[in-house]
Image (cartoon, rainbow, N blue to C red):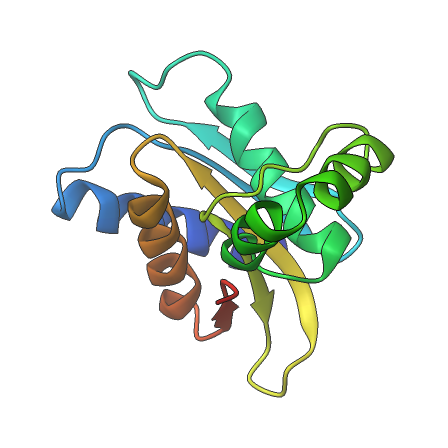
Length: 141
């Protein structure tokens, strides 16, 4: 994923959040390898929001599933998800807001993680950011 694409996602996600009067957000975009492309924290975010956003994005990449699916799995398989969280070094936050980023052809090119408002609103902002750069968001189900 190009840096300019990641920047466009972040800018659009922030614009969406501000238009909906969401709480201040931390946003992290990782490429398909899990390498940080961009990370921001709006003024007024609470402490550790960037780390939570990273855990949402990293967890989605590590499992190949949007974090909404991970949220369901943690309810149904808590011991398995605890073990996976340990294996990935604790960087897995199994709540909505971690969205896989795909091309229109389905190729995985990265993930975006957002934290700061409700998990559903975090996911909504992530999807808006992805759509704004003409890519496809996969939040899980």
